[in-house]
Image 1 (cartoon, rainbow, N blue to C red):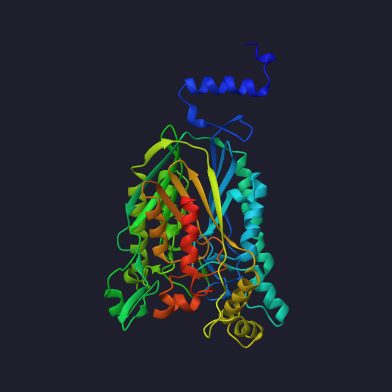
Image 2: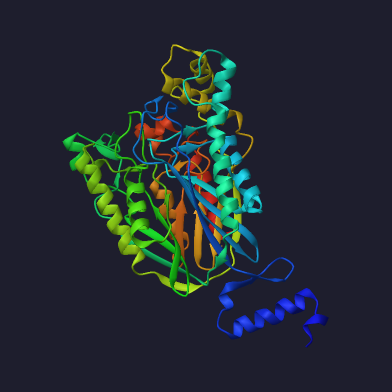
Length: 462
């Protein structure tokens, strides 16, 4: 056939047939119009560390030391359905309308819809706790605002968008996706330690109480999961998923990506392959059993997590690339309304300039959650064949991660939590009877467990 007489679709079809005959068919997919397009990938990274002098969580003191730069890292995928973006930010939280703002800027930069963009925080506690709605509430209440400005929260979104836009110019073919996992030794432990009478003790990210430290690990997900994007079995990007609070210390004016970032960046430096890390359902999981806040303990956490990452990337099981298929499910949770946490008390607290910085900020964040409650949260899923990338809001307890994996036992389910962190902790109902930190810090009423489980089930099996 004379190619000069072909229309565009016929010509692309001939090219696609030739590519398939050459054994390269996995590079290609079809868009909504049935036209063939390549499956391509690019990675991006940028520095989103606040300037020195910016109040930083969790001390809320002016930032004095940048031990490690805080990074935003991710991938852009392009296939027959368009472009997709997965992004992990070395921040503690992005909440409510600010989380939407980040997704919108990234979607614009990638030339795609917000529905195909997932932004999660890694949740280091040596990084911004970002809720621009809460800042506006404190500004409206009068008096000094004990934290960063709205502009300082929004500026990194533009930095990430610029990195995404540049990445789009570097999109390159990939033909396979691999999965692997490795058990992580002596890092995660459940924070809620039974102490009798139906109550629990709190084993935080660092713990110096021998009785709590010596208690069993409790319920965790011990496996780090890895997804590798490759061309001709050469890795182009590797995404890791693991469930634990990712901090070894907190409370001083220092920025760091902490032990999870240390492991991530070491593996990238050694392998030459971009490494991206996502935190799973860590609401009741931390490193306290194995961390006494010493430098030696932090080094051990880093080394053991790095060892698991290295073991996982050593043995990916590849399958041909597939187009990304997205699914979303809305979730509406009722705001907390009891003696521990309610709107009236929090409004009074955020307006009281005599309150501590963290108390005012925490109260403002609860009120910002109450004011957005009419707008549902979103759970999303990106599927690449039998690989399911699940993106969840808030800080869910680890049992929700294990539940989600049980619903698709034959698939590889990689879970990233800490998307929109407006709801804070998402707890099992029993937690409100047992007490403990998570129940006090949750923004949602008891009853969230069933709503969340139902949304997970609909997302994965709908």
